[in-house]
Each structure stands twice: as C-alpha cells, then as structure tokens.
Amino acid sequence: MEEIGVGAKSLTRAECHELMGTAPIGRIVFTEQALPAVLPVGFVLDGEDVVVCTPSGSTLVTAVRGAIVAFETDGFETGGATVWSVTVVGRARVVRDPGERVRTALRPWTAAADTRFVRISCERLTGRRIHRAAGAEQTAA
Image (cartoon, rainbow, N blue to C red; front, top):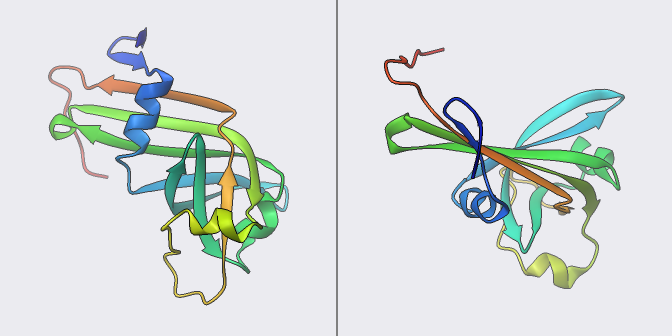
C-alpha cells in the first residue's frame, strides 16, 4: 500500500480483489445516448473479470456491447472509521456462450424472465483505503 495523501493509501491489486469479494453491490458507469449513466448492480468476480446480470431488454445491455466502462464498489471497516473504494475500467461484453453463463450463480434483482450476463474485463484496477481523521464527525445526509 502506498500513501497517496494524509490518511489515504492506494491498494495493491490483491487487496482490491479481496475487498471486492466482500461487497454485495457495485455501480457500473457507462454511456447512454452520449451521456454518463450509473446503475447499481449485483456482481460476482470470475477470475479477473466482473460479471453482472441484467434483464435482456435493459439499456445496460444495449449500451455496453464492446464499450469501455467503469465499475466501482466500496465499503467500510472498523465501525466506519475506515472506508475503501475499488474501481475497474475495462471493455464490457454481453456473454453469449451458455457454458460461460452457467459458471456464475448470479441472478438479476428484477423478476425478468430473460436475462443477460455482462462481463467486464479488468484492464485497469485501482483502489484506495481512507482513514477518517481523529475528531472528524460523520454526518447524515
């Protein structure tokens, strides 16, 4: 881990993967009609890749085919005194091979009858852990 500011440290690739494995949801960032879009999604890690499941008619399936996207997940440790964030940047593709889809136990959040898996390659992986300064108060939004 390398210090990147007071109380902030960059995470190693292994630390990023370990923390991502503990997170129940993430956010996929993509372009929809030339504008940025962000969706919360359930996900699993499959090797180095992030895999999400979505209804086949979703805007996500249409928008990400072959596009470069970002995926972010985060969490907190030790009663909220330490927070972390991990970001993946890579090419997204809709999974077509039925054997590849079977390897994940991921299901969409909605009750869609027809679903698609979207795989995001991990071309760039960055993360940071931030420790709240002593005396810093957490406020409700």
